Image (cartoon, rainbow, N blue to C red; front, side, top):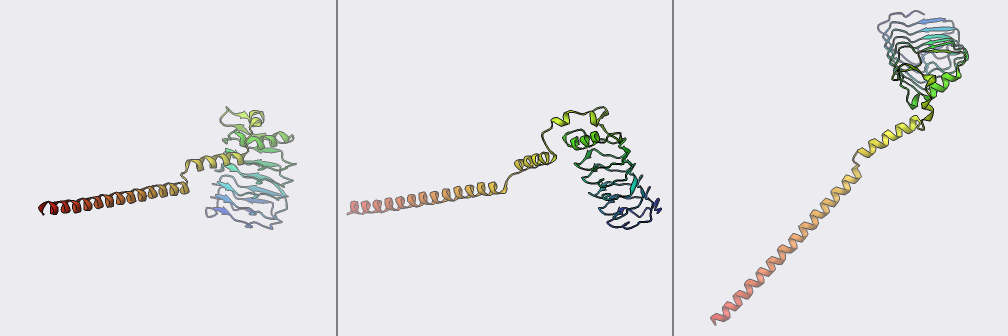
Length: 242
């Protein structure tokens, strides 16, 4: 199936290529694809080569390639991927070659790669992988792939050091969830809480009301005293005239 250089195809939707049991090659290179949805290649079981290089792919949904039991080669070179999501490449028992070169990948989520028993080559050349705590799961996966040549899995911020040689990620105690939780907590702490504002406003209003009442009492007292003083003055003046 040759859809080479199709400038109208910008998204591979769910089930768009499902049940193509007689297809051996799907050529989608040099299109303008930006997104690959889950189940786009649903139930393609035969031997398959997927050519997806030279597109504009920014997002591959979770499980987009999951259960492609016959796929042997996937080429995702020269796209705009930044993250490989969880369970993207799982249950693919015949996958031999996976190339994701010259993208912008900096993060690989936990369990992005499952057991790939026939994988011979995984190439990540010319990406920008960041070796913080989040790389730990991928590092352990690389160490377990004794028959796979993992090419280009290096730390962009550590002079190209191989990920499998980075030991300090094992010292990380935070998980991705804890890191995100910490960020959310910090944001919450910095954000003014409406209930506290309401309470403060209520206190200010109450204080204002109390002040107004006190002023009214003082005013009434002063008026009463002035009135009494005037009565006394009139009485004394009348007696003096008498």
